[in-house]
Image 1 (cartoon, helix red, strand yellow):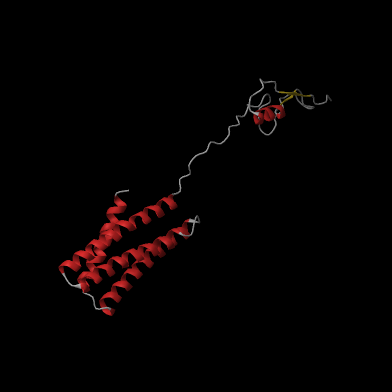
Image 2: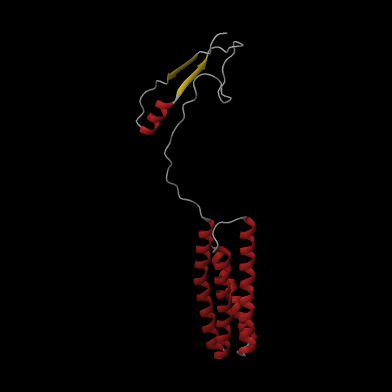
Length: 187
């Protein structure tokens, strides 16, 4: 039988300017297998064809801005609060000028209910970070449920507890919801 003959030689290339590429080129080898003891076939290493391996390209990663949809959504909701507060304050002042103080407080309570519910919803739904899809969906649904529980609890307390006019409380709620929709639609 004839022994296996291996020829191992370094790849000779032009010296690159990058020291990482130079280190890779220095370690890269060409392996050829001339004969096998039982048959005259080419030798395969790791299911690769014999001969020169392709020269890898080492590129340094470029700095890219990562897209973070959770932070973007959190910022959009935080920026939607300002128009809600302004619209609620304007509606409350308009109710104070046209009606009495109870109407103005009712409008303010309705708007504050939507603003507080939105804040709680944002904290619950987007405060958990990255997780599995099921957990994210449950946080979103829990945040939405908490928002509407807070809104209805404040509306009930304003109408039944404080005795403010129900129409004024609902008008404040409607003003805050429309301001939120308009602010988020402009994004």
